[in-house]
Length: 174
Image (cartoon, rainbow, N blue to C red; front, top):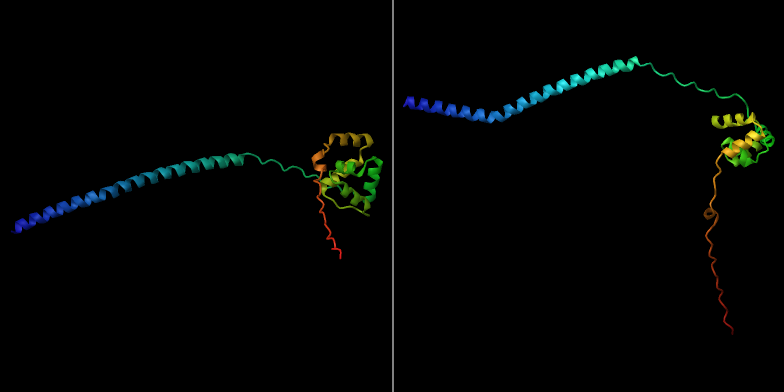
């Protein structure tokens, strides 16, 4: 009987090993697939790092462009009296002068009424300094080159206002 028990134990052991092998087969295949994917990813990373190194050396070899020279802000003073006399000398209206200076006519009015040195943006100051060196003809040609906004007739018309009719109560005669 001992022999029969031994044979049965060996058969059970053999079948158990077979079942374990079958159960581990899927896990083993998945592990192999993951190892392959890992090695492929490592190869791709190495290739990308090599490309990055070559790009870095290429970029470092290119000289940086020089920064554009900044125009220094003019130290010329602009006063209200100067703006007024410049406008009169060029024989321009406030609106025309404002168009040349790229501002509004209200701003020109405020400049002319102000005493002393005016404070303004760099672009406006440069435009005014540029106007100092031109004559009447040049001012007129520059004005002609500036597009004039056209007002449409529909913008001028307003909707008629309806007046309320107030009716008075008539007092009853006694």
